[in-house]
Image (cartoon, rainbow, N blue to C red; front, side, top):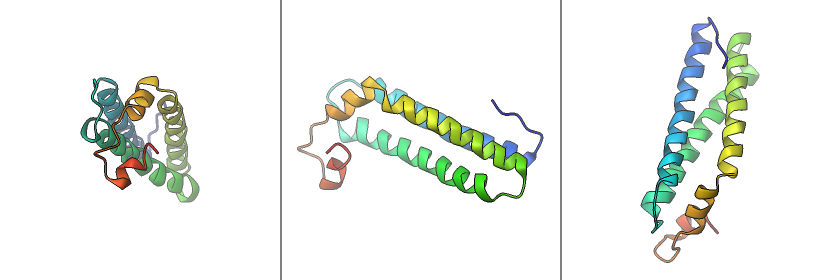
Length: 117
């Protein structure tokens, strides 16, 4: 865990770790879901995971490259590493895989089907 005395770096870490925690909470919700797997209990939380991860990745990817403060760049790089580890965990999560694979595609709109096609 990175610690810093820079207020901007601390704020960046706090904001983006909160995003990662929300993504983890959405995953926990999907993992706790029992059949039937639906748009509301799997796809919507999965979409929220994507939003949280993309928000953290976008902000930190940019900040790591352009911020003038080395502490802030280092904090952004820390979040990028944490995002990578999170992505690996999500990609290897059997219950998430089963939930996505167990969706009944019949009632889904075409745009929702794209997630699992």
